[in-house]
Image (tube, rainbow, N blue to C red; front, side, top):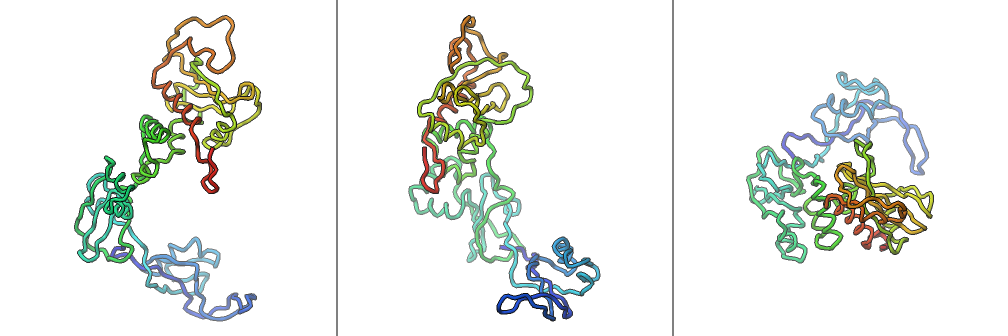
Amino acid sequence: MRKESTPPYCRLHTTVPIRYQSYDKALRPVKVTGIYKFESFWHPAKTLSQLLRECKGELSRYGKVNSKDGTVGGVPVKMVPSTTYPEEQLTAAELKAPKGYRYWEVLPDSKTVRLLSVWDHEQVDVEKKTARGKRIANDSRYLPPVTVSMPPAWVIVAPFSGYLPDRNKRVIPTLEQAQAKLAGLLDGSTSESIEEVFGWPNQEDLVHIAFRRRTPPKNDRKFWEITGQQFKNAEKVLYRILHYFAPINIQDFYKGLLIRLHHPTGQGFIDLGTWKREIDIRLYIDKTICAQLKSAAIVRGGWAGAQKNEVSCPPGMTAWYELMVKLLQTKTMIYSGNNFEV
């Protein structure tokens, strides 16, 4: 699809013969004289001066570019239009698309446009009632196609489908949405392929929304250790940590910190580390939102979870921690290229 006013891609040729380097049949460099064709320059333009302005940076290696005189390095050039045009996208504003529609499909025979909430090939699955198509149709975000008039001043040429650039943006979930989607992906109640259909981030991206490596502002807060635990199958857990958060700093497998992950609000953080050569996890929460259950013992244990009965914190913070535990306990596809899953 393209607008009637859109110019074709154009090349530049010199208008007079010049001497330049070429190659013979044996691919040996030779000097020849003739019309030089700037084969690498391929831009849409309505006039020669526009084409020269568009290509000025690329043409500068040939000498001074003068768009008024139509010369490159002092040599006059001409614009040679092609029969190829840029592909353009219809917009939601032009089509007056209702909220939720992100794609379009032109019906050439009727000169109308179908607005789609999913890609056209996914809409085919819906119409054929395939297993995947049924899952898409049953999703609350799915909207049935709507037919609208073709906007004026457009030329109907293949491809006959595309996306709405002013509507087709990735969903940016809130922290609560990211945690809920991630929890659904981990327990199998949510399908990553269906989430992708509606523009939601994949599992790895959701992890990085919910667990931040960078220290949030107000890092002068004081934190209490709330809870923690050691993981079984430490080598698998380590692979999963590397998959989601590499690079990490491994300095001491006996008692060391691998990585610190912060809550997006800055109210807590998780330490993933080692304790006597096992992988452990510890939750720390801002003291101002915690309640002390009993006085700290005179002799305090150093293992993860040793202080778990001394302090309580808001349920949302422990749910955030438990989501990380679930993430690192769940079988993960590390590299699908050779079916590497741990």
